[in-house]
Length: 323
Image (cartoon, rainbow, N blue to C red; front, top):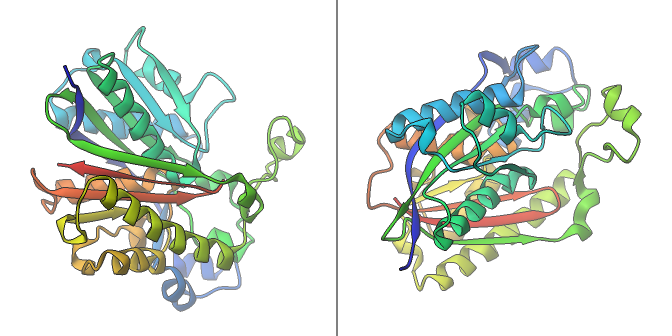
């Protein structure tokens, strides 16, 4: 018997604290107009002191669980996509598993930066297709503000914190039609945090392990790569561009989003955009945007959705979903 997976519930959470462009104007050499023109961002949410990635993940997860009508005990797989885990180990997924009172099922993290949620969704879908899992919790959660140099105007204006979650259930008909994952480590130096546990732990401990980005090079690569993956996804499913009802992209900046929409020949009214209010929340951005569009009624059952992301590594990927 062939098994498939379907998204049956979504949830999102954003920290209470909002940092506007006007606030950033006071601390770095930038302006509201400069940020809006280049990124489309007007504000971002920042986790409070003592508020951690697992806290954000838990709130998003509980909202997705409630929306899906399941019980925590029904979940038999937990995957968290994050670049900002609270501990070296246990994984954020294991910490969350304990908070939800779930015991025994596999729980693990995936690190693919801004493509992390698509990677996690793909892995969960593979578990479903083997028949070994019936109900999965998939989350993208980040406290990205903790790895930002707030004196670097090229990066501090871009990122925010948040979490988005989905519940997947095994189904007899395909909800997730296909996923497509890629990476190329030759481009690592263009978007990275160059320090980690085995490479100068003192930098991590002292809070000097920050995001470094070659912005123009990343932009060019993202636009080219996301254009290719649109073609790959459509070809794999023998679909035309006009078959896509909604584009739910990684919320990096409005120019990359607009370029992907142009590749699809899709009007911007059919593109879910939250970058203006959320900023770039890395692995959380796609599920957060999806949750917004589901809850405000834009996305309805039967719609065909293309989710796509691009992140440090470089990593990139897509998921085509029948809602």
